[in-house]
Amino acid sequence: MFDLRACHVERTNDHNYLIRWHAPQTGQKVAIYMSDNPDHFYSASNLGTPLLHTSNHEVLIPNPDTGVRHYFYLQSERGESVILAERQLSLQGTPNFRDLGGYEANDGRRLRWGKLYRSSKLSSLTDVDISYISRLGVSLVCDFRQVVEQELEPTRLGDENPPIYAGLPVTPGSSNSFITNLHNGIIEIDDAAGFMQEINRDFVINQTPQYAEMFRLLLAGDQQLLIHCASGKDRTGFGAALILDVLGVEEETIIEDYLLTNNYLPLDKEIERLTKTFTDHTGSAVSKEVLRPLLEVRPEYLTACFEEIKTRYQSKQRFFESALNLDSAKVALLKDRYLD
Image (cartoon, rainbow, N blue to C red; front, top):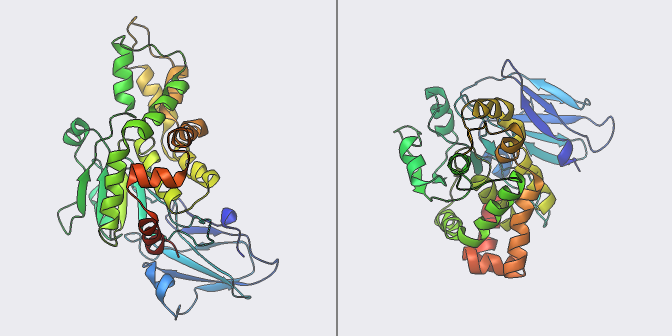
């Protein structure tokens, strides 16, 4: 079998595709196929003609159309196969737009590419970005930002065949509200990382109705889902973790996906900007030491959610049923739709 942790698709600076993998056996040739429709690989009996055969462990594929997303099917001489795509989508107006596809569930199936997305805010998308996203086929958007955030920076996805839009405001997890409270002296944070863990615990304690509604909408049809908030890290991070958890992905892998936000958000640039902009209630600049744990994600933040679930519900199954209204039949339906 292909080692999923060693299989990656990345976009080069000139927008071509660099594909890396670990072959099942050294020296074995791998056939590579490409399509702009992932269902071609999930349902078609005829893959068509491969782009190439190679015994290397990486290859550069020219991009025939930068306006669409491409998916790749790798097949070894022995018949082992894997479907791959870029984890981070190449968009100018939102840096943290990612596909949850490809992760392995505990039953051996893998999440389908091109079905479940997560991102930061969508108010700054370019026309090219909007065209690119529209061709992904996203049919449902869940926005976890607070109402004032939604009004000040509306989600912008174009007017042609717009997806269903659901505003599901989640109160905690806003770095702006935290900084405002710090500035006004409402809170004093010596341990910002500890504060972020409390925010994540509150997702479990007080915010699960919004996430339960996300699952209700997801079950209403065979949706291609996009969830987002402002930065795509806290409120969206918890939502993505719930989706992966319900579909049977191991917690270690869920945390690895969660931490990818640190790779895609311009953290140092944002920290530098905020240190010059905000002061605390004493008039002192908010330090980088306080801001960094606030603006990045850490394993203990998401672990705090899982610990709170265990404390309050004793088991994942009880949490799914009681907090998310997902019985075993609904979970099975979600797995059939989103796992291959």
